[in-house]
Length: 145
Image (cartoon, rainbow, N blue to C red; front, side):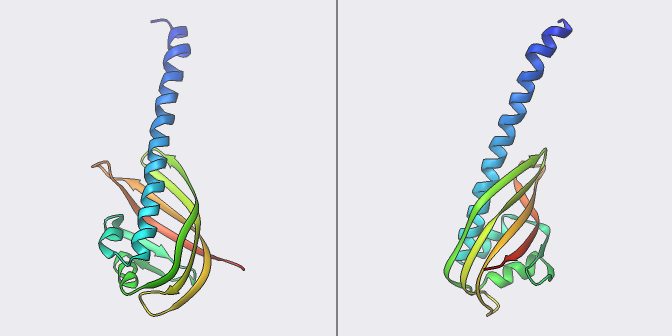
């Protein structure tokens, strides 16, 4: 094969294949983010648990840093009038993806805290060796009214 053939045919083909894989991964992460939001609204701990890596770390709007166990504990007993995400965007970097979006919620968190706020969030996902995406880190920031 000549170099010209490789340059004109194979390189664009490989680029398109890579872009298609990223698009599929982006769609998967968006779906997982919506699954997480639905499970949070329904206080479905098992569904959220399945999305998080065992060493997951969260930084909340107050700057508190905690792991998976506390996040799941906070979900139990939550009651929401409103709990929804929007504006989800995903960037994929091989086996790592960064998702950003907005959240608005009104209700009572599982720890009894009354909540009525809007947030922006960033989640970092990794693709595990078995091909599944797991969230390893999340960070939330309050949006001023």
